[in-house]
Length: 254
Image 1 (cartoon, helix red, strand yellow):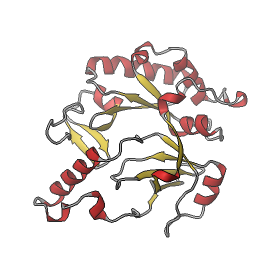
Image 2: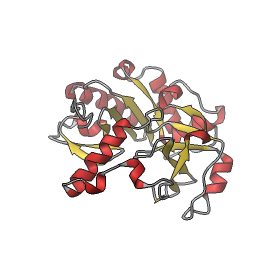
Image 3: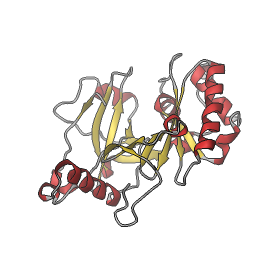
Image 4: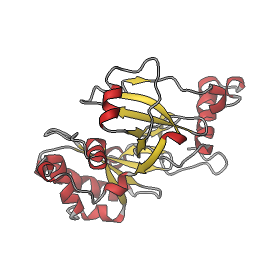
């Protein structure tokens, strides 16, 4: 997010006792992670929320109201929130127009998950765009290894399919989310990545795939590369971890 509104709730409601915890930044991250684990998980990162109302904040960019009027949707982003609130991102025209904001549960009309869009079709006149050509191939099981997973489009493709607002361009990447609650073997990850990259090269686009693991979002390419540690993006912030599926049974964190 290029700009992010301050939370409309007190920090003490998110991480009670964090200020008095020992260990500085490490303790703060641990406190936040504990709250995230206990917070409302009804809305997941990359879900698109249809809102009946978008709350206004002092630092809101001028374009936000027009963007929301055209498509009253926002994407769930990764950030700790007090009970009843959800961190959202508003999408404007172009990559530079992203605004991190907050919604209250009462503002949410409906939820569109990435996997609910797996078989969605764009408007007829939009189907020749490379991003949608690639998605159509995946919908036809062109990448057989993908069929064992729950997956769906995110990014511009997901936004357009959910809102019916033209968002994808000739140069848009295809962003994918794969639900990976159980460990994904690295050799299988390599096979899946190779198949997706072959399809992307054939069509002439980039396919960016993220695994949603118990510790957060991990790039498929990083996990397939066999690195000692990979970057996991969680509500408590990004962290380098060795095993995205290793959760502490007592704390519920990595």
